[in-house]
Image (cartoon, rainbow, N blue to C red; front, top):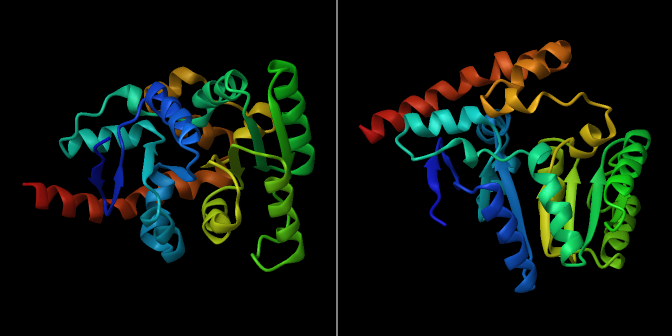
Length: 250
């Protein structure tokens, strides 16, 4: 799939269907790949955090997480549509159904012990045939620690095909990059607070708001103290690379 240069990085115009199909292809070929995503927050971090930027330089497939990226892509002349926006709130159902259909194991690393345990119960009730294991994300993630090595062994011993890492940006991406060579899995998905949403720990924005690009407004209303900088300040820093690409295009 052709990817588009985008504010110093790149984005790929996947749909949920094509991205889910890609998961199956990677597993059938017995490859190991990371499938990452970009939203406004990740673009800000990409321009501020060298290690985070290095992570994306090593990733082949980067899907779009958020309608603002679709709108900015259109501004830059790319033929992006609403279906190119893929968030885990919408996509995880396809992931779990694929795992059940192909008898694949999933390992979810992330969330708090309480929220993760609740989310796992929700998944077990909704998908009784889903083979999934979980470990919370509150551990010393330094590559050399005994605790981190224990988690790597736990993942590798579980015969996992799909590893979902939900520890928030940029921690999850840095952990994946540090441990990539040691992980014996096919697909690694940095997925943010996916399990927390399933557990109900974080309120789920109405899907219609996400489809029109206003999911951020709902989240800002629910958690203003935590998210005001992300949604009201960070996008300002993207004006410079956006202007530079527009001028280059013209």
